[in-house]
Length: 513
View (tube, helix red, strand yellow):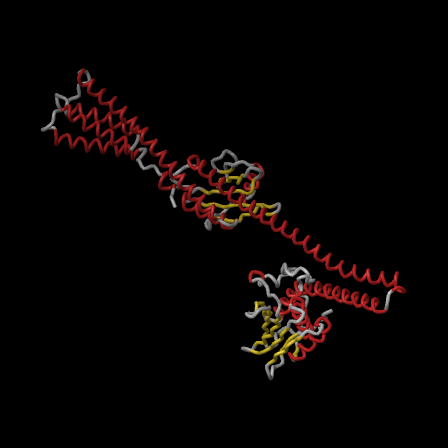
């Protein structure tokens, strides 16, 4: 990372030190001329002094260079203009030589000094550009506000060796959210960040506003508002003044503000996107729930209306079929409402398990008895290994899981298809599987079938809400187990659940409703 302290520092000596350097170079040039005066004409020695003046101008400044020109003129005329070791102020040749050397040296010194100053300005601008580029590059990859604040603090400390503090609004207050470790702010200055934030003005040391402050406070401005304040503490022994740094510090503040605004806008866009997705999901769920509630209610209402209005004209068989249909729809409505309650209770962590040792065979028998009517004569194969141990589980909830799995298998298997139930133990775990001979599930849908209200698109004739497998997943996870689905190699679909045999620590009783 570039350091401005090394680039802002005046490379050329200034003040008294500059005059000392200039006089030293003239003295060195005089020694050289003393050595060469036996071999060169006096006029040629004048070039050595002119070269010396150029070196003084390059390495010091304009005033030391002019002083060196004057001294070189006197020395040249004293030592190398005949007669030697004599000043003759009234000799016209002496005057021409002196003023010619002085004017030529002054012009050369002025031109060299201007060129040096421009080169120094370019070096400083290049250093500022490098610092800003380094900061902007790191801010571009900062993903959140904390990363941005840390990046700004590190860059300011490294590039200009200054202490920094950053203030951001928190409700109605302005809080310091990041700062250099060694930075301390006087209690008398704690109101200045708020003042700079509300007035959108730079305040503090060197600004003409609140000059007694030790720090300088820059508001972090965006196009629409201020989003914070950056406070800078320039060291007393700094190599550069506030005037030199003002432009760069303003650029630092502007880049910080833009980076924070980018994160804020990105967060707002993400929240808006999430909100829109939630609204779409809520509408879809509302439509789904409305349809699944209205369909059985409409059927039940239609049956009751037909019996009440045309009861005398209906045969006993038709009346029975209507009542059977109404009972089926009422049972479906009851399952749907029960599923909604179960999924809400699981999401709210309200289903506290009542675990006790249970027989797996009894669990499967209860589930088969509950789904006997849906089987309609289908074949159900049960394959249990011998001597299955008792498993600690909530019998009511796990029976609900198995009923949902059997109901799902019966829905999606062929009318003459076989549903298989198997149970075995492996590594202190119970492995229970329910498989069917239906069409299976597309591979990319396998992970999504346990989501709420998610149903595979086909077949469309299958009725359901997409809650059954989601409830199964919640109950099994509450038991400390896991559940997943696969397609069978020979065709069909299998759901596998795995549960620990040992009882968990949660044994508190609760009604299941």
